[in-house]
Image 1 (cartoon, helix red, strand yellow):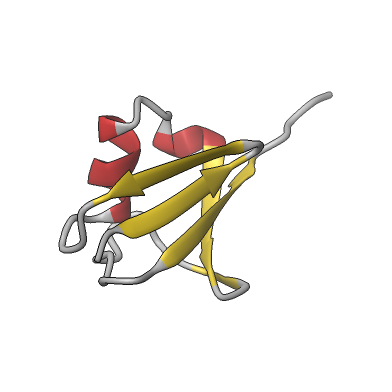
Image 2 (cartoon, one colour; image 1 turned 90 degrees about the horizontal axis):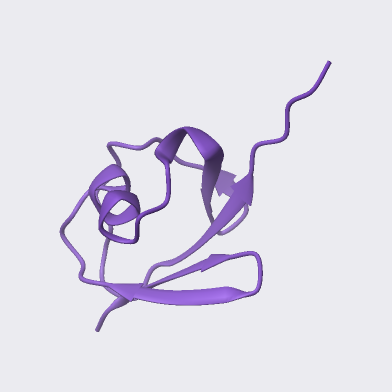
Length: 64
């Protein structure tokens, strides 16, 4: 069962067993530009993705 990732209006699938960072790079999303969450909880970029995970990526907004 793949891992589902959602960023804005787009949905992606990646394989379980990779890190969040590796999945983001594969999807060509800059890891510094998003905050990954699983079930409403923040997770780190070196978290290993598990089968059936649904990861929501929240855009980091900065400004001055």
